[in-house]
Image (cartoon, rainbow, N blue to C red; front, side):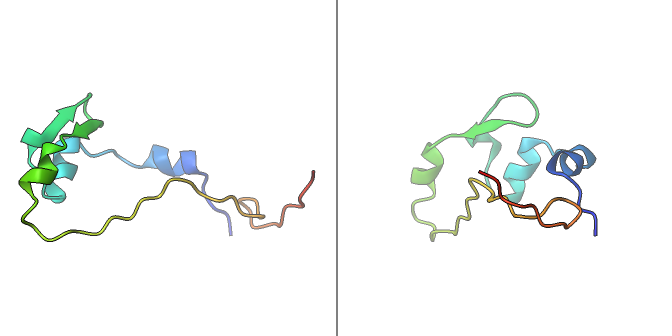
Length: 80
């Protein structure tokens, strides 16, 4: 099985505008500070404005651990 690289996957994906993503997440545009079409900061006042709402859940991915296999599925030998 051949797997696509991260860059191949990213190049085949069409980025959505930030306001569309924010709307899906229930965040009003008034809380967005946009940096172009596909980047933005969310104003922290959103937290105090939503303080009476129940807490949500957050899944944060900060890194990916490399595997011992290349993209064709063959095992890669460790070298030091």
